[in-house]
Length: 207
Image (cartoon, rainbow, N blue to C red; front, side, top):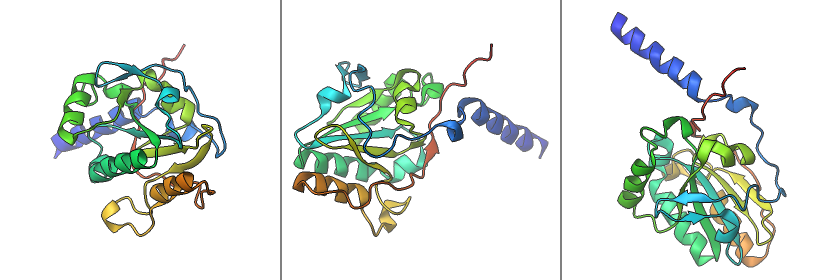
């Protein structure tokens, strides 16, 4: 019993050290211009990409994700389906891994490459060094989505659907938002609450 208590305490402390004050991070507002659009991100292909260059005719979809979060795993098929839907709607698509505190482990660059290969990703899956983009976007969860229009202004943020398990979803917020962009219409539901694992930031050192 004592052994299990110590293990549980260790896990809790570890989470506190790596999950850097997500409650202090503020998400960007609807209408905000794309943050850090020219920042170079290393893709699992070995090439560098930028969000600005990844934009297509009708906009850009940015997803904060990772390799092992149970909520990401539940969304694996959705992540690929929405990538296909984005392409069909002439919307760019980039996935960002901001789990800097796990970069030497389950979210290492090599682990990302293996995960992307297993999933059959045919779109950029990139490293967010020091969680810089997550901080700029105010992203706190995986998965969490941000959809920008053709002028790179934010029109939707939050979750894919109305349920943390997409199998139980009845409303498809992201898909509806992408359809609206394609048709040149206003997005009806502009934001929703993203439910998932916290992005594992490195706790800043104290001076």
